[in-house]
Length: 203
Image 1 (tube, helix red, strand yellow):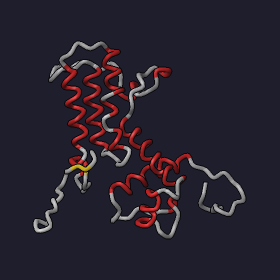
Image 2 (cartoon, rainbow, N blue to C red; image 1 turned 180 degrees about the vertical axis):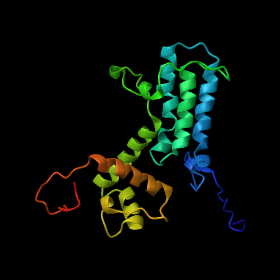
Image 3 (cartoon, rainbow, N blue to C red; image 1 turned 90 degrees about the vertical axis):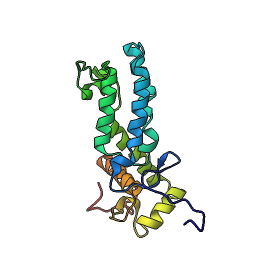
Image 4 (tube, rainbow, N blue to C red; image 1 turned 60 degrees about the horizontal axis):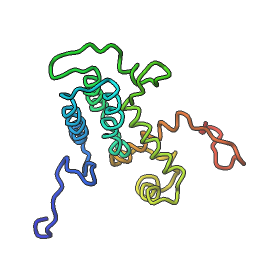
């Protein structure tokens, strides 16, 4: 490596804002997201903010930070919960170790305002929706470079919906398959001439 002048990639390095390698310690690989959120919240903590100001900052900035990474990878659930815990503390005005009462459960705050919530994002579910969007893009654009690369590597002899998850698959591919599972919960065939469907397997 030294003779060629090539820099060796080690764990948790980033390229274009994403982890270069995602190994078994996935939480450590994506911990930079939590650190970014924490820095933002720490910067606002000492300022006098109204609840409306807190709402805008949470929705427009804090919950937007993980979006890029979540559009490519499935983020560990434990990390999602830790990020949501920091957001909850900021929303209820907790500073440092001084605890504040949380008057509503987080599940209630993630409901729309029409249902009595605040419209905050449930981070894990938002992650699933972004990955489902990637899976839909592969499904509907067979001529795209993304589809061609994944097909050549992971499902050369079948369709995307029939592709299997293998132990040798990258975390990016496994994340897309997770998004496909979200699609499968609601996907159905619109019957045309019937040639492309399986009577016994397809919904």
